[in-house]
Length: 161
Image (tube, rainbow, N blue to C red; front, side, top):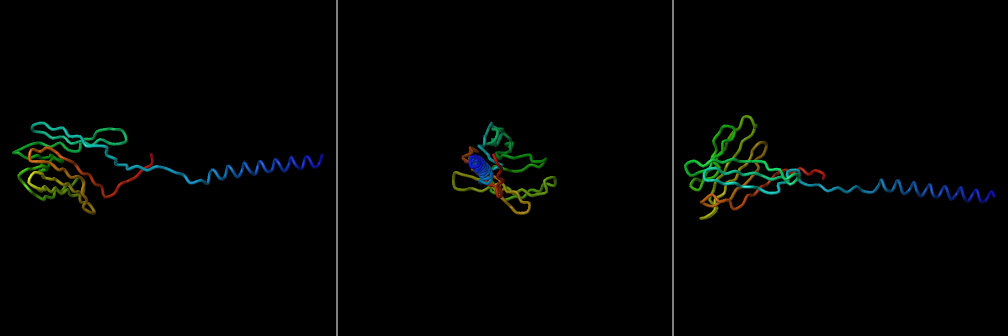
């Protein structure tokens, strides 16, 4: 009888020990998580009329569309009206490298328009705060048909799903 109680006690102890080991080992497994870019842009949308060009970005997370530029055609070139300041953004006749200062943004914006070859032109827009970095590059032809947009970020923030 005493031996039976001892075996039951050992058996109960072993089950409790095994259960404890299982519980503690589950909490010590490495945790996996996927990280995605916070500024994930799914696509750029372009709506062009005779005298206006709208460029919007569509976010990966919720498919929301955010307008990043509304450009107006004047004298054959496209300008933005950024914080009340007129900026030349797209031109098929002018090559330039200009710096714009925005007191409310505490930074500079640099716009570079250059001819890539006989048929393509690019506009690169840089932001300069601590360092200068390229925000966006638009490549288009002489008829202002946008061929592609390149988007680079110096710092990409990743966040969990």
